[in-house]
Length: 301
Ligand SMILES: [Fe+2]
Ligand SMILES: [Fe+2]
Image (cartoon, rainbow, N blue to C red; front, top):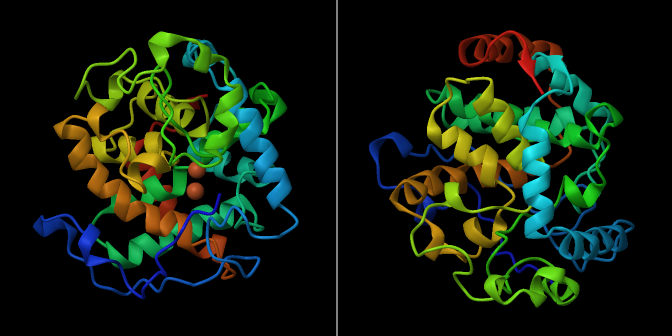
């Protein structure tokens, strides 16, 4: 399947900009047309060295990410008993991680974090919470490391989707859901499945991965980041919702508000994966000050 991309325009699409005074764009963010491999972003049919690895990851994800599996992972990681460290220590640790689901990225993860954060900082100078959100949104990928349980790629990275209800055809490599054990459970096969209309995403079990894990870490360590930040962290890989508009019937009013911020954030997450390095030492003091503002010095992971 190819995800069709409207050819990114320069600046940010005003159509997706929320209708509040806070969200005015200054159009300074320049969207690159191609990723690190010279292809369109999120092109899952591009012939590059990583496309087969990416498809295999989604095949395994769609077979193994069951309702039961995601629930067990949430229970296991909610105890946050793996490691104690600061946010910045985790940013550095993330350099040891390779995300096989990503057809666009061949840079160290800390560069992706800082590129996203610096791009969004330029366009939203007064929303410091958004800069920090960009910096930390992918820290949950440490789940791949042995000290965090060494989970396989399919349980950490890639697009996420709701469990306990029918899979939407807009999910990347949807065809591989035909082998999901949850397909055989009638209660999970209707549009609403085990949920009620407008129940709110907080009541929906998502496939397990770095999004939900980092959300748990931030929440349980009592971050003072606003709800929109936690929503961005938790659902930034939920492309079926924020890119394709699927599963809106599960959202409530609060989700709809937060979704506006996620759609803004997503452009910076996706399109900052290009070849322009950020000088880590230069920007580090700014991000350390944000970490001190919104997080305790050490967090449980
Ligand atoms: Fe991510
Ligand atoms: Fe990211």
